[in-house]
Length: 203
Image (cartoon, rainbow, N blue to C red; front, side):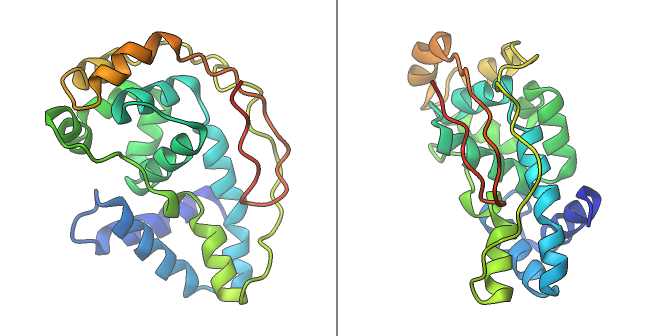
C-alpha cells in the first residue's frame, strides 16, 4: 500500500470526526479503520508511515514545533509530527514544505491567543504499529527500509518567521524566545529495524 492509501485512511477518519482538528480523536478513528483491515494490509502501511516520518524530520519544522510548544525534545518532535499527521495531507505537506504555513492554522492561533495545550499526538505517530499489534494479537511489526536524514538541518535552516511572530504572545513565548537561538539540532540518522524505529539522537 502507498502513501496515498495511508492518507485516504486518515482522511476517512477526519471526515468522521466531529472536530477534525482534534488529533487524539482522529488518531482513535484512524486506529479503528486500520484494525478493520487484514493484517497483511496493515503491514503494507508501515513503510508509507515511516517515509512520512522521515520526510518530516526537518530542522525548520522542529524549530516551528519548538516555538509553538515552548520547547521540543526529540520525543516532543515525534509527538508534534503525530499531531501534524492527524491534521491531514494538505496541512502536513504544506508544513513540511514551509513550516510558516502553520501560523495560519486555528490550533496554532489558539496557542498564540493563550491556549496552553501542546500540539502533540503520540498515538498518531505510531498508529500503524499499534494497529498491527491489535490485529495480530501482539506480533512484532514488519521491518521498514530507509534511514532518517543524516541531519534534521539538511537544507532547511531558514527560521519559520511567521510562526515565530504568531507565537510571540503565547503562554510559551518566554521559553521559546529565550531558547530559539540555541536550537541547533545536529541529528544523526539511524537505521530502522521496524516501524517503531530508533529516534535519531540530538547532540
